[in-house]
Image (cartoon, rainbow, N blue to C red; front, side, top):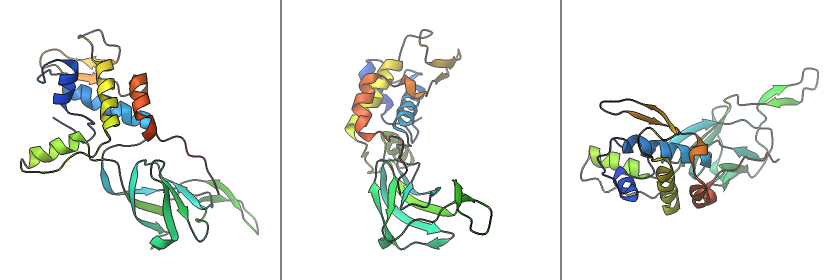
Length: 222
């Protein structure tokens, strides 16, 4: 069964590996390879609409979402009050970096004690909440839509290099039974296989293909 995380299909993976698409290992392998690649990229890759995330602020003009590949900012609220959409913009969709135009975002965190407290340690207090759309419609999401409605016309908009990267990861993970160090568990009978989703499982070729979409660690700026 496909999952929304799948960046390719079992049929395409089987074609790349030159094995039968009925191979019992393939669904779990495709999902694990997809999750490993997403972990390496630094964000969830599948399409999410109206996702919500509360974010910390150091009191500067930039906010940094944990999400990457942000498609659209829907709204931002501070203390439950919506900020005018004209007062901010998405500076970096890949890095989820948002800039406020008119002034700084309020500091969130602890303040020093005393008559004139000053910001001390920033952390997520839940005061600033960003609603956004992010990611791409994956082959897995398309397959799930077709399973629910065979007349569905949804198509994947995942960048081709990311699907190639996950196919390269699938190829690197696939080994004859019992010889793959990335297999964390295996049962006999109806064959249930659990594959590692550690980002170290992503081979160099896949990393090179996916590099333009990778989210690097955000550098806090004022």
